[in-house]
Image (tube, rainbow, N blue to C red; front, side, top):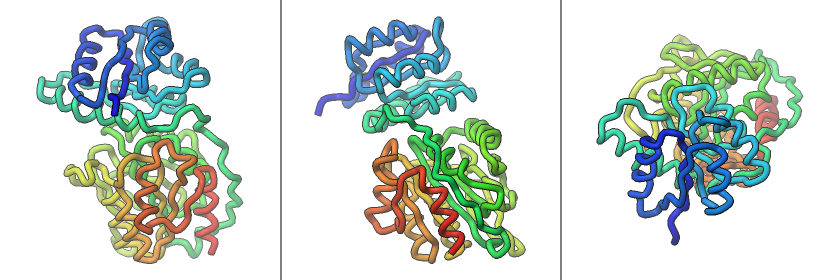
Length: 341
């Protein structure tokens, strides 16, 4: 199998050289070209036809986000953004980027090698399998919200996602109204970015959204998103749902892990829960969703056609964890339908 052909775009020659050397050290990756700005990148795309592009958010002459907006309709290409702790990365994901990595600062040589060999190379490999080029933000099915919170005080919705998940979660959550039972979400994302992502959703959706902290109650009309460096578990204190956010060990290669959340929901909420597994590489959360289903919960998996990467939902479906497999735009409506029964 031929290596994944990569174009590296960054205006810093020193950092660009580090990226090129680091990626080329992986036998499954070949950097075929590099560029210092969007104009050189456009020419390199036409000439070298790369499989994946890494793209800095901040570039001279034209920002990486503006370049993406112009590029994606004409030349759909899997793109991994490289960003400092900056809210703009979510604009890039909205514009069509597959994923992002946090730009390292003041790392020693060993940490930098880990970033290049593990995080960036892994994201490039995942991106090479992603579906791009379709409009990501689709109006969801109109939700006839007739579910009263009365009678649903013990209900809870748990959602897990990875690659492509920031946009997928937005599609689901913007279909939720203030009558939705409490929602808990794990999205694989670095620390710092989860808080910004929660604030972004809070500004765009009807429900309240915040980054979770230990002791937060799970309330109707509110979404709690696991912090980027802690596992989130559901607990019950004095008859009410709360979350605990602790532990930094990686489960299925991730912290936070969907598996950890779903297992806790299965144990604490049982048949009162609805579990949703969305786009993402690997199998994190699949066994946890099966635990939820075995405990009596209703379970939903995103279908292959609407996933950026049909990994996590596929594993969940294959092991019998998914009761209802459906397109992304129908999931919010299905949640309400299940609550109304």
